[in-house]
Length: 143
Length: 417
Figure 1 (cartoon, chains in turn purple, red):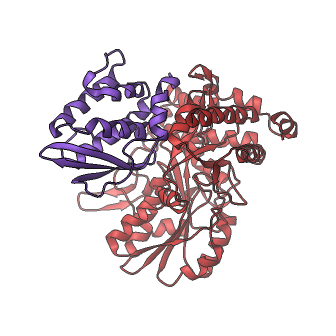
Figure 2 (figure 1 turned 30 degrees about the horizontal axis):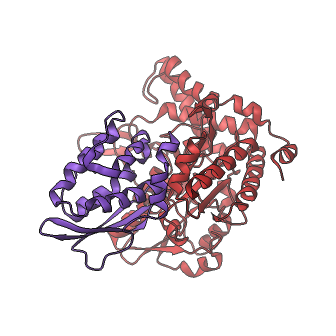
Figure 3 (figure 1 turned 90 degrees about the vertical axis):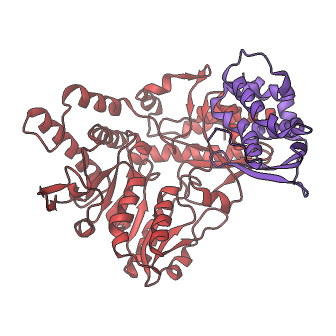
């Protein structure tokens, strides 16, 4: 089970995350923190006409949060703003049911479904999503 | 020093016999023996505490101080015996000086609201330390916010020791109270509380001590410390959750108005007016946590039976051995290296976030704490978002330290991949 959480692809994203660093020409940005565990990230988006042209993240976080943020920024590029919330809901549903088949639209984010077996760590996988939704001022329904 | 050699030094405390008193130590976690190293968050309960609580509910459950019937008499006697036990444990001059609360947090809030608030004005000052647990920080911030008073802080150095020479300068005629943690939960530092009390008393300023992490490891003597308020949490010292106490000088308690109103704390009530009960009851509104107090008494008996000095000696050996073993890790930094420490080791490791360390070692049966330990300003001082922390109790062993070290090696290897 531990090997599934810390699988190669997650560890690689943790060690060398994609789209890492702040964005000077971001149109939307928000800070996401989980004070309890010490995660503190900033999600950066450049949005034109309801389409995300570019997404980046910066900050300090655990492997799960960093891997999720890295994968999510890749996933976001070229997506419509309205696609984010349905995708996050599908992502949460994956966490709740390990037997559910992968959701094609989520791409490599499916790797993170192994986090579902670690209830104490789910918040880490949700943080980048919640922060992006906050940047776009879309209510996530999560506290 | 190997575990085997260090074990030969162990004298005085029969740790294996102690372990048999803790039923939970038999359980397995992720199919590994439980190695419980999160004692500073809450420690486990010995059989005698569990049985004392069970015995109350099974045999003499009744409300206290209210009935003439036999069960109520027995419950009241056990409840008051717990108060007397705690008074003796802290070397308090009188049982009347022990107020039962839910724990340190409630004790501090009681003092903030009932002792400090009535006389606090804008411009007055409260002095605390940089390493306070939020329990002894947030109530003062709230009070200062409300009244316009100022919260000042005794600074610390890079080892996590208070800069004692600054205390005198930080106290002035506007200082209404000094609040200090006896043993830091995040850093382990044992603060020179008696010295701080001496400096404050010379200036006529009362001192409150957060004793949450001290009572399980130190012989606490409130008269020798010469403090004014001492706050205790039961669950940090082998007792139940939800019960704790405030020790305060009788003169303070007499002068303080009640904080919460209700039953138990009254002497006489008409629809127009209430006169209050005598101390300590005027601060114990409502039915108290009777089972909790009885369980706490059993926890004090446990500490007395095995001897707090023998327990502390054993824990200090675990602390020294762990510090030595962790020092060999590449990229590991121990946060808090005071000369006098309680059995707590906080650390950060390069390339391994505390949260990931916690998850991985958990799968080897090792329970440790990760995060800010409710002491965020201390974390900010050391410029770390979070640490991993191991903390020891009487039942921990050198073999458990080895199991933790082996699990930590696995975590480091795994996250380095």
